Each structure stands twice: as structure tokens, then as C-alpha cells.
Image (cartoon, rainbow, N blue to C red):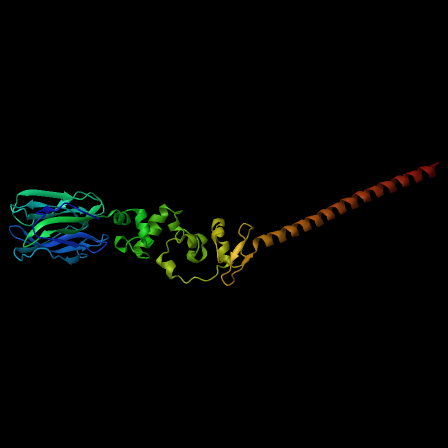
Length: 342
């Protein structure tokens, strides 16, 4: 927090100060004025997320004693807030004129100076706080009249970040920061739309998108990344009635990458040793299924191969042996014929 220089007399009258509620920004004042600024009677303040007419909060000011002059009000245009003060110091070294300098709250565009209150003039004063500083109240000195005026300022870098940048809006949707600074409220239709259609389309690997970017139905129940990173949950996710266990049909429909993130699945859903741990919420024990199943089928295949090789080897031996016997029989028959002829 900070304040500008006190314009006008710094000796006469008594100190006074009036501030906007915490987390709000000054948007206007109610006052009394005639030949000079007789009194400031109210501040008009608004939340940073909605610096517009209709959202203003009125704060009573106790400053000068003079009830003379004509009552008036000045409010900054919508989407702007007070960033400075300007005016004239009269011949009695009191606040002869006062105007508010209004600047776009979110972009810091050029300030617009409002109409002057009061008439007496002598020495001009003009103050504008650097962006992103804006007024959060007024102070000064007053007796019968307004003897001095001072702007109290605050640094609104965080609110502007939460209201204008993708990262800040996403953090606001995550529930971070002052609620008055959020452009959208968590689980609202605007936050759901922003996170699903905007932020997470651009930043699918961001931890805040671990639920929105998940393949799974009920990722806040079945996606380990969503659960551990506490990603953004849409209103539908928050209200969905999810089962305690993901069935095998749902599990097997997931991509391999999603299967690696799956938790709370039915036992024996795994199709490879790379995804062997399935957590059953009804039992605190972790059951290893994929590795055992794979080992069993490997041994079955080995036994079948050994049996096939034995059968092939036996067949080869049988046919080879039979051929030798036929050749030997033919040779013995030939010898018998030749001996008989002699």
C-alpha cells in the first residue's frame, strides 16, 4: 500500500482517512462543493473483477464540518478505476478544486480526468499512480472545509494477473487468490468452458489439466495423475455418480498410456506385464496379476513346443529307419536270386 502527496494545507484541520473494503478499488466519490470543495461524504468502491456501476459499495466519509455547498457525485466509467487526483489549491491554501483521474483497470490505458468540483483556483496539482497501482481510499486534513487531499494507493498486479492472463484465470478457476480477483468462479459454467475449450486445449500437459485431458470417465476416481495432481474438476465431474471400481471393458478400451494411469480397476484386467498393479478399493492389498498370467502362458508355450519337437523328431526317425529296412530287404533278396541262378 502507498499514498500520494497531500495537496493543500498540511497544518490546518484534523487528519482524516477513509478506505475501501479490503480487496476493492476506488471508483468514485460523493462530495459537497461551492466556491471550493467543502467536503467528501462517500467513497464508491468495487471488486476488481467487476469495476462497473451497480457493483459499487458506498463507504461513508467523516472529513470536514461544513454542510454548505451543493451535493454531487462522480463515478469513473465502467471498467476503469481511480488512478490519480488533480485540481487546484485556492488562495487560502485549501482544496479549491478536485477531479478524479480514471484509468482502465485491466489494461492500464490512458487515464480520463473527470469534471472538477469547486471553483477557486490558484495552484494546480496533478498526481497519477503508475500502473498497476490504483486508489484504495482518500485521506487528508479538514476542519470547516477540506484543507488537504491525499490519494491512498494499492498495487493491483495480482488481481490484474488473475483477471487478464490465461495462467491467472486458470489459477482463479482452481480456487486460488482472493475471490474478488477471480474473473470466473471454480466449477462455474464460465470456468468449465475456459478450462476445457481454451486453457487445456493449449496446455494439455499442464498439471491443472490432468483431469480435463484424461481419457477416462470419472478421472477424479480412476486417473492417478488427476488424483495426485489435483487437476481442475468440472462441475459435471464433481456431480457424477462414479462406481468404486472400473470394469475390464472400460479398462481395455483405454490407450496403453491411459492404462498406465488407471487405478481402482477390476482385478485381472491387465493385458501385459507393464501394467501389473490394480487397486481394489474394497481391499487394501495390491494384487499382482499381469506378471503371473504372463509367466503361466510362457510355460505352456514352452511345453507345447517341446512336445511338438519330440513328435517331429520321432516321425523323422521312424521314416528314416523304415527306409533302411526296405533297402536291406531288397539287397538280401537280390543276393538270394543270384545264388540260385548259379
